[in-house]
Each structure stands twice: as structure tokens, then as C-alpha cells.
Length: 72
Figure (cartoon, rainbow, N blue to C red):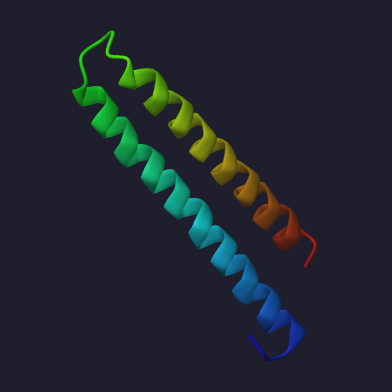
């Protein structure tokens, strides 16, 4: 990424926003898989933990993007 600093910053923010969306989409897919498992299945707990971790990471990235964008 070489270009004016504002273009580079915008590109970086775009990449972070895309990554946050990808994490959210992955969590959504895992939720759909988890919902197919019967209640009480031991794998559900693993799915839940992974989904929560993905959503937490997506939220943190989104906050970073929003904060950086508001400083422009």
C-alpha cells in the first residue's frame, strides 16, 4: 500500500472492516451448524465458545475502524 497517507489509511480501514465482516460471517455459519446439533450435544459448547470469540474479535475490529474513521 503505497500512496498518499489518507489513501493508505482508508485502504487499511477497509481491510479491517472486511476482516470484521468475515469474522461475523464465520460466526453466523458456525451458529447455523451448531443449531443442527441436538440439545445436550457436547460439541455445542465448543461451537458457542468459538462463536463468542469470533463475535468479540469482530466487535473489537469494528470499534477500531469506527474510532479511526471518526478521527479523520
